[in-house]
Image (cartoon, rainbow, N blue to C red):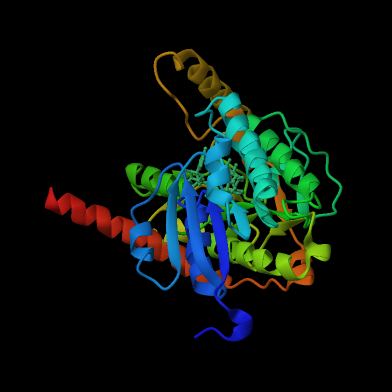
Length: 375
Ligand SMILES: NC(=O)c1ccc[n+]([C@@H]2O[C@H](COP(=O)([O-])OP(=O)(O)OC[C@H]3O[C@@H](n4cnc5c(N)ncnc54)[C@H](O)[C@@H]3O)[C@@H](O)[C@H]2O)c1
Ligand SMILES: C[C@@H](CO)CCC[C@@H](C)[C@H]1CC[C@H]2[C@@H]3[C@H](O)C=C4C[C@@H](O)CC[C@]4(C)[C@H]3CC[C@]12C
């Protein structure tokens, strides 16, 4: 039974609630937000696991919709107290056009803001990205920086450009009057590279490793640090900041926070090996097996091939000039701003985050073995 100060009276809306991060935010809200009365999950594609959540004490409402359609967003927001906007088109591989990325990430976010204003919804948390800052394509390193570290943010790629524009819209909307006259309170969370259960790129690396006989070949120097954060902690940060935004609007409104936890600083590949290693994949080489210039030629070749093949098929490999640049540029954060402003402490230790991620990969493996033996 909820105590009087914890009456179950709040309606939350999570956009992109069926995505990798969105699913963790949805589950975290159900576990950690005692004042939740209704949870609306809005996504272009609804996942079957939502059905099992509908049997719990909180009313879970699945809404199939598109953030680019203002009327669909407005209908979903009507009556909500808090919106957590995670929906986005995450594409650094050239799968979607720059126009589509802009439409979903920027126009979609504008639609969410306008829907909050029209409907009198006062609290908006936006999932931004480290890429709003960098790494930039000039290869400048961002070494254990924080929210105030000066850095030349240069956005040439459609994805980081769209995230930066959307973040700006969200922060500028802080303080706007919503219907009823109260101020809109917004903030943005900037995860570094998220990992954990459901991470598609980790899945891809694992399967690639299996195809190559349990090996992956080092392509990035071990000295390049890449920031990573566990999905459960990113979700927890969203839940906590959404709650505290309602109590400490003056402090948190209009602010940005990097998402961080105790995950160690490593290169992108070495970090992945923390999970893939125990699952039978090893990283070959202590130094990159190919020199950088050769990888760059391969990346440029991939980009050319993508362009040539576009009328016929979608060719979108992991390696392109942009992903090569990100993977080869140090970008790590070291901050306690979220702890100072809203009392954030990671919910999952590094050991737990690692164990959970390994168990997920192992479960994936058992499921595919079981499927093979059935067929
Ligand atoms: N994955 C990362 O490492 C990472 C890091 C930093 C920030 N982010 C941000 O976190 C958010 C979630 O990313 P993710 O990794 O979970 O991606 P994801 O692709 O798994 O999830 C995004 C979700 O948004 C939904 N969506 C896409 N277009 C939509 C539309 N037009 N209308 C409604 N829903 C739509 C998708 O169906 C999907 O369920 C994104 O905003 C992304 O920019 C991700
Ligand atoms: C050169 C390859 C040899 O193994 C390795 C390529 C790795 C890349 C595919 C990934 C390296 C860094 C990743 C990005 C980073 O973690 C942060 C991101 C921010 C987020 O908002 C979206 C995802 C991403 C762009 C992420 C995508 C994959 C990498 C480029």
